[in-house]
Length: 209
Image 1: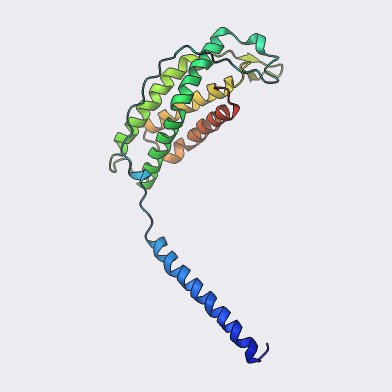
Image 2 (image 1 turned 90 degrees about the horizontal axis):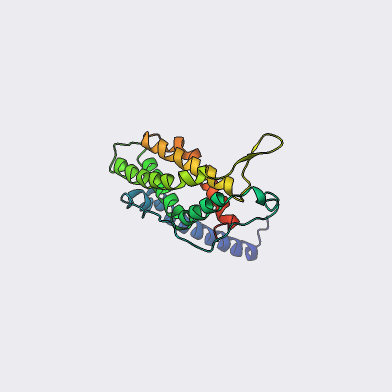
């Protein structure tokens, strides 16, 4: 290393500057780690009851992208009516219901799964009431969807996104059952994730537009 004072001075200054910057950063970061910001989601009150969906007439029509254009002949008027009405529920309440489920799980997890803590039970009852109301609306419509068998023996829905609606409904039912049984959040987690997955497929398909 050079001992020339012309080089020692700028290097020392640079290191000193870095030390000051790092020290300042650590001085502000360490207290933040020891004092986490409050979690407003984990302290929200139980949600209100969602409005009852009353299906209305509309000019909505199903979509038939390839290869569903080839199965169009198997789609019935009952299929179209069922999807039209499920789309009305999906557009109005899917996002809100999903947020309610997530917020409840955050509250339960933040209390280490203790169902006796605070208003966890009241929150669970409010969320399951909204889930059950949605399931009651979706059940006859999901069951009305036509299902056929492929040559390989697999289940097949000739209506585009029919399968997504059907499986979303099934997993939403499972979420309600898990919460009602006071299961831990990790128990209902897989059903919640599948509910999100099929709902995301519906959303990204734009089938309800």
